[in-house]
Image 1 (tube, rainbow, N blue to C red):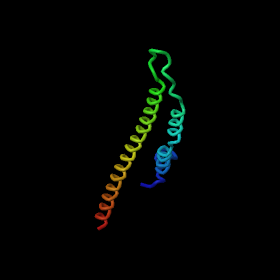
Image 2 (cartoon, rainbow, N blue to C red; image 1 turned 90 degrees about the vertical axis):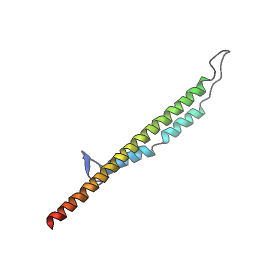
Image 3 (cartoon, one colour; image 1 turned 45 degrees about the vertical axis):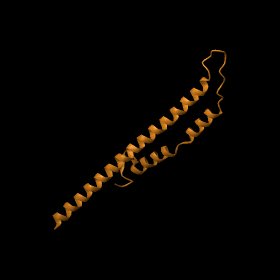
Image 4 (cartoon, one colour; image 1 turned 120 degrees about the horizontal axis):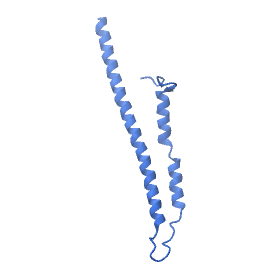
Length: 107
């Protein structure tokens, strides 16, 4: 399969792989979010009988959400790569079969 083969309109395989690579390498927002959370104070427990340090828990939950979202993205990218790999294997097998058929018909 050629990297210049058009998939949809003007989009090629190379374009798709480049876009996936951009997503994989786009991690600056995660670092910025973690730094922002780290810079936030945890607050204090407030008045007597108050629920306690809720800021710390909220920050921890925010961090969990960030990591889970990124891992979901990574899993989706891996599934896409698996599909692309399977498709390439099938195309290569089909190509090999067609070459074998062509050679057999020529002989």
